[in-house]
Length: 247
Image (cartoon, rainbow, N blue to C red; front, top):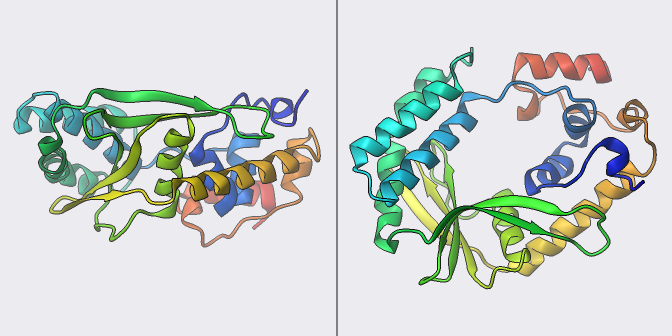
């Protein structure tokens, strides 16, 4: 049995590799020991805005697209106690409008939420992801990201994500569309091959680590966590970190 399957991992994703690179202890805590904190309101904001923007690009009026985003957010956060709920919900309308304004000149996307699966050299499980929007006429795959402050360039974690879609064999370029409640920007991905190479190195690092032991608790003893990390901002995540690492 390969190192991933020994730990019940049948595939990897770019988000998992980004977590492994940024916070190995949190990766072990969440992915190997199953101690995950609830998804925060900001993540649900992104899901909701994406649903609204896609609806607008597919022909819905902005008002109807905003209603869709609000409905998705309300459903996703029904049991949430996140104190940022009101702030995040209040940003939905502006973000949906900015997303539609940014992407509507490109026309109706040819495909949405496209499954992307590919294999890295020497890695025994596939990489799986889903691209947000694909435009054949423009030869472009676009991921949509939301934030309260507009990024001035593609963030490395997002570049890796889009590069992975191209690594899956798409003969297209990539880009990231950033939207806030008041601004928007679309940045083209440069040097996708370098990001794919970085992802491959990260995957080998993870595979080698998992090969050390089939015991997740033994692996947890080899790493630790930074208690100031934003990954541990939720009180339940902090409690999990204390339970596992004593910090």
